[in-house]
Image (tube, rainbow, N blue to C red; front, side):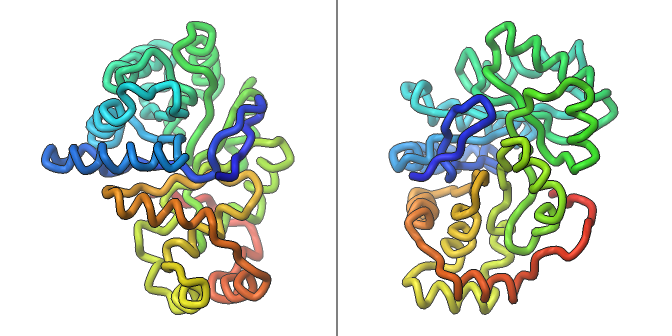
Length: 276
């Protein structure tokens, strides 16, 4: 498994696991836990979740999946923007830790920007680092102007920006991603196959047929070959996890890349960051 280095030098898998929409139905818990555990066994040891997902339900599923193997996992969770204040962030973090059954997060993210000043959120994050509740912090869904403001507010320790990025959502390539790359801040790409919506595209099927792969694997392989990108697809079954893992072994050639650029053109100018 290829790895990506965070600004502090920590290496994490380029292919991790998401948990959006897990924990919403109790009858799915056993299957979701098994899927996450299969991913861990396959080297997809970075797991992303959030207090928003099923209002803590996804964190409980992740907590069950990592019980007994916490030290083998790089655990990421996210805080609601309304909880990112000086007074509320510590409480939100503690609640996430309890649901996850752990004493620390490897990475804690601001889920998106709200009304709390970024300087206040930075200070609250740094206090959690000092307390040992989190080992590092980052952000999600912040565009270039937000990132510049974050750094100006004392946020030089930001470890990642988790954004919507896939073949159909290439807008960050124009300005945000070069800015992050210059500062060695990796991108964590959520919804890397657009929740399945891009998989019917003819170009993906054509390349997949040549590679003996699936369209989803080609879309993931395109992300995984890029420097500084961590992909976090969600899979609700062991079979889906195994399909995702095989994407890390696919090698695209110049013809494949040209075909994907023709089908999914890169941006030719700045546009606002999209989010789901």
